[in-house]
Amino acid sequence: GQNIDQPTEMTATEGAIVQINCTYQTSGFNGLFWYQQHAGEAPTFLSYNVLDGLEEKGRFSSFLSRSKGYSYLLLKELQMKDSASYLCAVRDGDYKLSFGAGTTVTVRA
Amino acid sequence: ETGVTQTPRHLVMGMTNKKSLKCEQHLGHNAMYWYKQSAKKPLELMFVYSLEERVENNSVPSRFSPECPNSSHLFLHLHTLQPEDSALYLCASSQGTSGSGANVLTFGAGSRLTVL
Image (cartoon, each protein chain N blue to C red):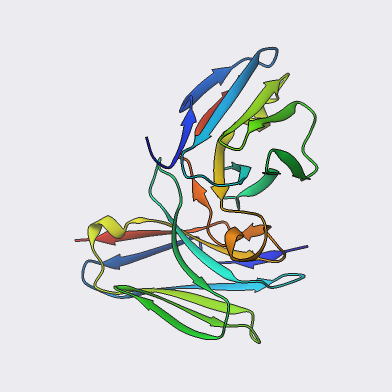
């Protein structure tokens, strides 16, 4: 089966940096995704990594190490609106995405 | 409207009721998905349709019955549900189910279902 682990909750201060780790053990690998989901809203796509290394998109960066089965999402210059759940997902075939349970990030003033 | 729209946003039903969830996408995508999201649990893939043909039924009980009349619409028909079926049901779409077209899912806001 698929196993994707990420911390349940994290708290950080406005303006700080938070790193959300994700480890995975899947039968195949065809890319790793991060989605953001605000309470009561649709998950929205943040980033996609298929090769090792860092992908930067503004205040958000995502890193992948395929040999270690590891990824992280880095949120810089935290803002209150970044309070949300962050979902790590691995694509293990053509279209199947296996999700982690999500990390709830709370940003405090 | 743009994106993926789900109705109703909230639904309360008894175990003997029959109801349906509706999903509509205005993105010109060819693939549509149903996911179940329970509190503190990973999203569970339920069904996948590609060009109106079901390509995935992830061991979902028969009390959930999907229907995809065209590439823009997806339904989930509910019948004789159990209280443990209470969850957020998310619809999503993608350009396709293979290659780069399957890369990014666009989700709807979900239908919050409560079974009494």
